[in-house]
Length: 167
Image (cartoon, rainbow, N blue to C red; front, top):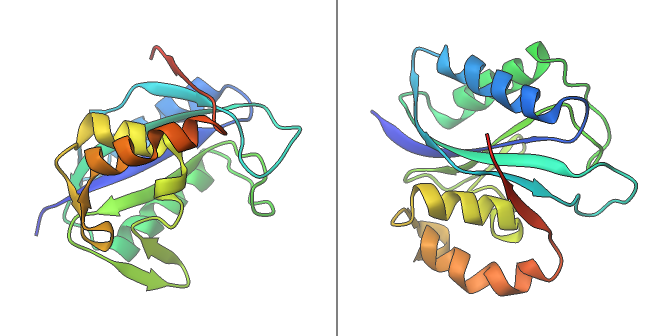
């Protein structure tokens, strides 16, 4: 069954724009996934750490027939192909691809939490999601994406820098 999914892309090492572009190119090769649209690219300050370069982030709105855990496996394979080195939590990243929302699914297993457990704490994720799928309903929060963004925007802006950049 075809499901709508929001993915986040982020990079704060090396050529950040190139990593995000290559990740989108790799995603476009997956036969069971179709990219419908992409958000603006946002430059964001790292959260929870200091001494790192800012991230470039974007959100993709896709459709897929892959189940969540299979999709996660494909995303991790793309990260590895693009040279991601796995480090401690909150460390810098060549590329990071996360599932933010998977239509109609709430899941909490060791390898995956849906909606993404930090979704409502990341201004870029909420902003990008609201650009792409404002009417999307997130059952766990009993709210639309746009409503969540509007309710959290002011609070999150105090701690997180988000600058829209061009592709």
